[in-house]
Image (cartoon, rainbow, N blue to C red; front, side, top):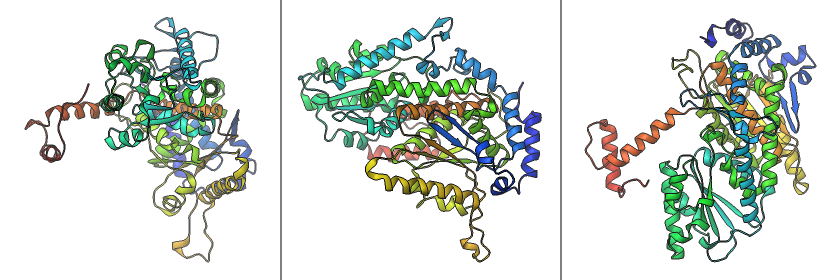
Length: 535
């Protein structure tokens, strides 16, 4: 059985980590003036510069050989062809089918899923057009002016991030809101100034059983009925559902025509391309949503067809493998120099950490190497005055991805110039540092901090789709090299199960819980009205 650390290339990389330990990135540029040209790649409107990494030519060659000899190529082919690569849940992983643009079929258990995918897209197009054009009316005949997405995790982070990133494309008369936190303050803040007669709720839950989402959805339903004095007969005009559990949605009161289904081969954190992306289509229009899918499809084809040495997801993943497994990095910073991308670090945090935060391999055996890093970050201009101090002079080794869009608004050109030059300055400072002889120790910055720079020609639906798909495939590549299952999340399921159990058992003096948990349960009982969780 494949074990990554037994590969001859892994062992060679172990040796190279020792022999290149004193190498400085800046010296690589002195040795090879063409390094930038050799270590930059473009696909459509996306450009990657990975030249400012602590990676020699031999290291890069060994990393690519490691990828080639891993299960990557075989697992990539199996993913795109609909095989059950999510082995613990025994299902395919086919978010790529949701944005597929070719004529060839995509088979699951011998059945082509593309007719169902195209039918789902047609429903999204029809519904989003009706709402945006004022043809979907509330029960009193008013147009819908606010849409509230009720979801959590993948049913929230993806659509929310994309809608906020593409605000420039938003319908001018349609407000988009997101309720994800089970904290009642979040719900009250969103609903405070909304008119229920002009509000449409999207209940987004794959199984229609997630405790937080159902609690928020039932509270939103009560709010609507209390404010309007209406009964269940009007729910269908103001509540729709995106779920694989049709019967549970019907039981909630959703009209059959208001249920948008998707499939169990779509993972939550990969679901924004499906009906879960309905808020995106409502916000930017179906044409924009389609462009998002097309950008992702372009990256899919690149990932499938480009040689490993010029394959952007493989390059990014391999660079990360080098830092995590051979240079001891435990974290990865994502720093967008674009305020519109302020939610991207949180989205990538879930994508990466929920996918590759694993300690057993695909066969259930303990892994013998480090796996997914801690992914974190925020917008760059703000981050410079918060945590960049640690990145420059701290003892932690944190590789960084800088992301920016090049196109500026006509009326804020000088702001955009300052934004981009700050990003270039930080990437340069990370690499070169400041080691002048006349500087006192406390002012000296050692440099040699690695970074990638990703530039979008503009922040458009197409380019954003390509960017998201790039990171999806990067995570997949690393999971294949580590030989783990990137598509389950049993740690998340454990937390859900225990939350439900404690909700039901909090009134009981249950000896099965440890003394700390029992003591905290007693304190909670004294301060919070205890009730059975809604289902």
